[in-house]
Image (cartoon, rainbow, N blue to C red; front, side, top):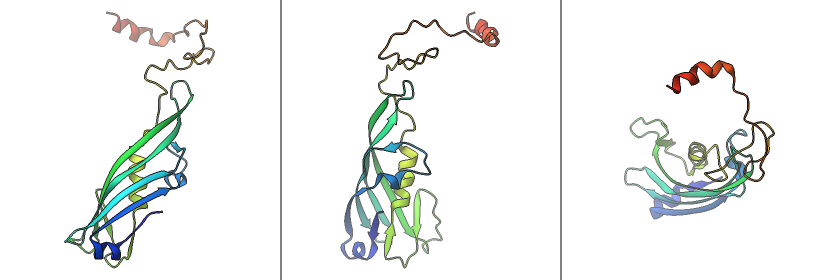
Length: 170
């Protein structure tokens, strides 16, 4: 998906990476939001004097979701600043811990797709609302209360909740 040439980074000290990554690369096992366009990634990689690599930048896309209240389609802009630190695995006996990522010291190319997918999965909203005041669906007839008015009466209240309701009314 997205590779960082460590030899070129060592020669120049800084590299710019820009890519449009396919949406399918960010779908994790069929879970999470769908994307309606590729993920735009803009990153700057810097080689540190200690052999570490710092990568920071931004990724953005448009999420194709449904409103959690009325089930209407919602296109939601999503942008996320990202920052990663990569350390050669022979340095200080470090292990990959989520904050700091390790890589074999002899590696020529660093695949940063995994950390990008992980950041996306953690930050992407699981739910969307078409608008803050969405009225949702009628629980009786299922009509969208934002677009139609129904004459349904309020649903029957389960009698088992009456004792709890009595406590809150005092």
